[in-house]
Image 1 (tube, rainbow, N blue to C red):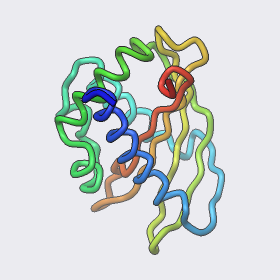
Image 2: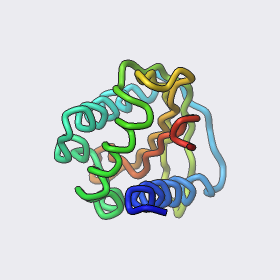
Image 3: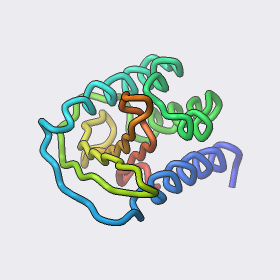
Length: 150
């Protein structure tokens, strides 16, 4: 595996581990889009940060685990991978949301289907949010699409 492929695999592994650890909690409850209206603007900041290659904007709503798990170098690799495999972000629509309990904490998992210029089937973006000091923070992020699986 070349260095670029190794970086991609490493990024996806970190994101999958973070998301997976949150999804193994007990109990879940589906919730409406209006109940998670805060998630759209958070994801918009992240997607604008990717477009502008601006890590500060991308990570402005990260919790401490995400800041540690996805530093600047991994962000750069993520941007490169997304640009080459799925192209430019165009739009998103809400697909669903649920809450999960883990270690006496409640996490909100919000899924969007996004349109990208090189991915005709769309990209599923899963955003896991928690609370930190009364603020919603990103605890997990996962991109999934046929082109990203290649």
